[in-house]
Length: 286
Image 1 (cartoon, rainbow, N blue to C red):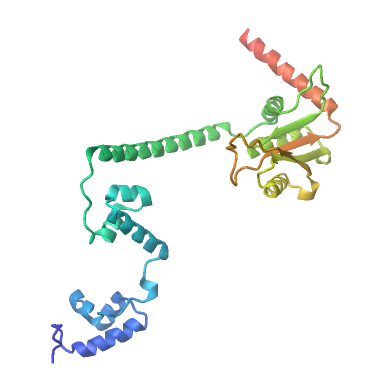
Image 2 (cartoon, helix red, strand yellow; image 1 turned 180 degrees about the vertical axis):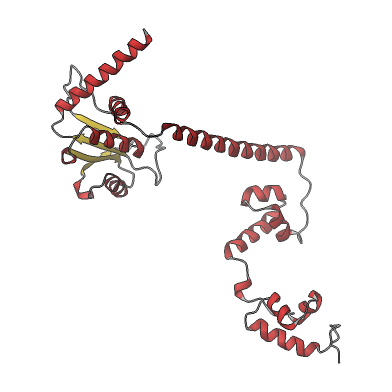
């Protein structure tokens, strides 16, 4: 006898088989192919009341997005606003909320604001890509750096960031301070070019007292290839509660102070090299 809810003969037998396969963990497609049931209406009735196996369900993150999309739709949000908020495709949003009532039509002011935001987001993405291309092209223009190029770079770098001797305060010591790992890398390569022994180089971290001091010490010690215990005592900058620090977060590691011991002679040479570069620059403009 044909089941009253099916046009397919032997419905009860097929349902028993379908349920058994479903509970064994098979997907709808696997059951369809196993039983040769290619009519979706009949397959739906065969599996009525049987939940899908866990492995066929969407990842939890997707479920969370779906739930949030439905929540926003019930609040009257449009597809465009939900897409901007969640970063999902409109096609996914449409599938998730298609059974919900449509929101009232936006007023022209809100619509103009949303359109402006979308245009600005697109413009920012275009600018970011232009920046990336320009920087990549510029980096490729450098090519292989010669010893002389590194020498000149190091002199200018030290004169910009290193300590200088003053007539009223004799400071003929080579001390360099910087927070940029790239600058530190170039400077250390420059010291190697000048044959400065590493056993005459000392490192010290300088950082705000409210930062993660231990993490900064570990970062810089690893970066320059020494043990944390080899660092000189860290200098902590006092925090002024009246100021708002912007150099915060995991990326903030303070500054690295690099001191060369017994460096008075080296300092004098650096000052002389820089003076020579200035004279040459003046000659070029004469």
